[in-house]
Image 1: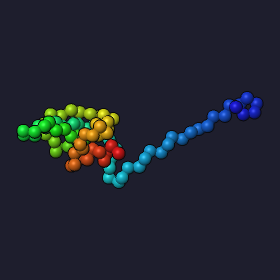
Image 2: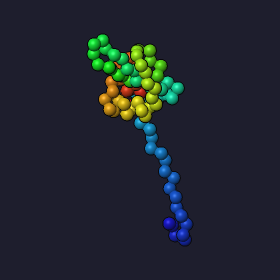
Image 3: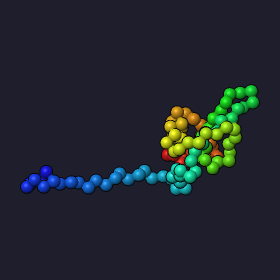
Image 4: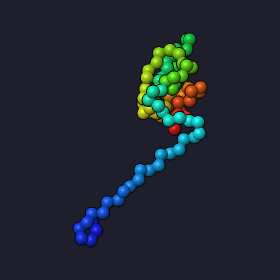
Length: 90
């Protein structure tokens, strides 16, 4: 409090958002993310993370939001090398 009992309030500005490399769009809810599961013949079930509009996937799919996709990548899920969801989420 200032002299005379007046309250002084600071106006804090929000921290600037980290910049993204040119050409990398922010995650869009309209695009979304998905995990595609596919069975390799005679092998294990494989999963990879894709952007929602990626056509380079096959098999069973599960839709995710940006937070869920980031958690999946942090947990070690492979990212599609074509649509690069990992670059979008950085």
